[in-house]
Length: 265
Image (cartoon, rainbow, N blue to C red; front, side, top):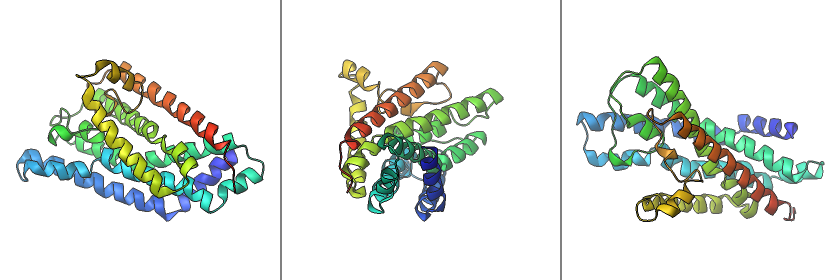
């Protein structure tokens, strides 16, 4: 399996697609931060918050994350890489684990600009705001901004950003079984984006259906995992990591259950 991971990492490093996606998220993170800075200053209208949200991490990764799955999992069916790995003696479980590991690494890589730019912006002590649309790194950027960070808060900021990356990996891990079953990037992207929109609507059921919301919180899509900030307790960060890792394991089990029964042509 180590050889499979190394081969996928080499392909990841050489492909132009991941570089393009990284460039896109860098631009989007910069635009998001700029708009979040200008809105509280009164230099642009508050209505621009809707445009700012389009460049936010939660919206961008919903599309680009599924694109990564399409490129590095569905694409390997087209170019026979998965077929060759199995033909050369690699188990299907090893293939799934290696693909998932590199997929999660790629997700963290293209989200890195959001983490870096958010960290720099928060460290500047400037005020940022995007209204009620703040979520993910955008929420971390705008929540309680406008003050300088202490040394302890810098470490807390790093811990929250790392936890957010893990939560995003878990959310996107559902693309692994989807890609293995559908083998078509366009289907994976469309289904996952529609799924994220549906999950966004479900989070609004907290007051009306508390029992359902409590059950939903045992997934990386529920709870307050996308609204973590510097005031989030350490126990909540650990819970977010635990729920995310458990969800990834479940997705691996589902992927293996379906993939081991499928015919490789």
